[in-house]
Length: 375
Ligand SMILES: Cc1ncc(COP(=O)(O)O)c(C=O)c1O
Image 1 (spheres, rainbow, N blue to C red):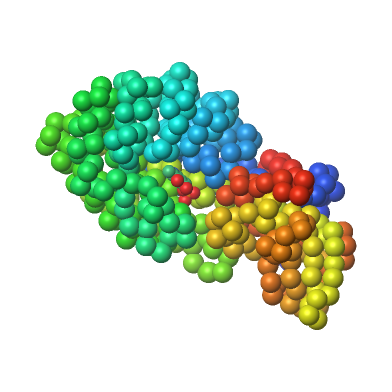
Image 2: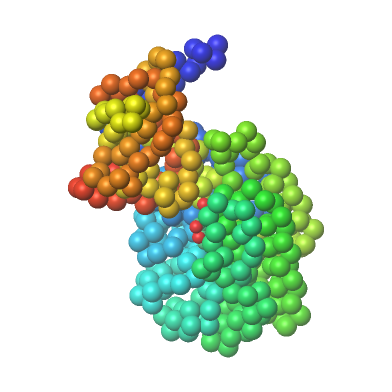
């Protein structure tokens, strides 16, 4: 039974390359729905604002907008893409704490008035270009063990949160809440627990100072199953996060989150073809038509580890996969256990929806993969 469905899956993958050419990234609407359902079921109090940076493809944004997601955008271009996909301006948060003044102005002109900040310089810019906006202070929280550290670059000291919110009020802005990010692919629930406690202290202090904040934004970071590990920690972590949110915040506090990887990571498969072959140091090297400068850029920028598959059967041997550019940085995987491949064979990577095509370049004039939305 399992073997038959694996064969059907492989036939489907072969069909995608025949129909669309190679390289091609197929993003499944069914998996996007399943991830949204899973998020909402495990965190019933939390409104997901999909982090468009993870994968801003218009098909992904339109599908999630229709499913009722809000959007976290990091730039004026992402903001335009979210609105074009059908997101109402009131369901968009401009969640880059450092924004060019012109981008702040264009957000205000498009009716997006919810923004994060973590310094007083940013508040001055927001007050000038988007007067009256609702502002959320982002604080620095532990990112222990997360695959991508974000507190290195962002977040006010929690002790400065209240003075910053007071300054926002003085500048004519509307202090709205507090946010944090525990680091991407966070598998340590303690990061969330500590960050939620920090946010609760800020909410309590704000109430004592009569600053009317009512949003807690718990950021992104929700993990997907990693291919080198057996466990899938999301549900266990989400149960703890839910319990802490209910314990620390009464019903008038609105809880939002900015999941990126969790929603789109598992939804995509990238299919490539072997365009070159060599034997070097007694090992087969296969050169693919996509690589580190293209849709596999997450290997560098996102410290990603993907699962590899091929459509050919045979005796396996340790092999090397490399990308199509002239740079020797462009080596994708060493020591993969693969059957002997021929030029034209298909190699695919799974779990590759997040931080992949989003950071692909056209280095050497080689275009990234075509993206198609599938059922
Ligand atoms: C401000 C902000 N929100 C949300 C995200 C999405 O994080 P993740 O994909 O880990 O859910 C990021 C990722 O860098 C981010 O910087």
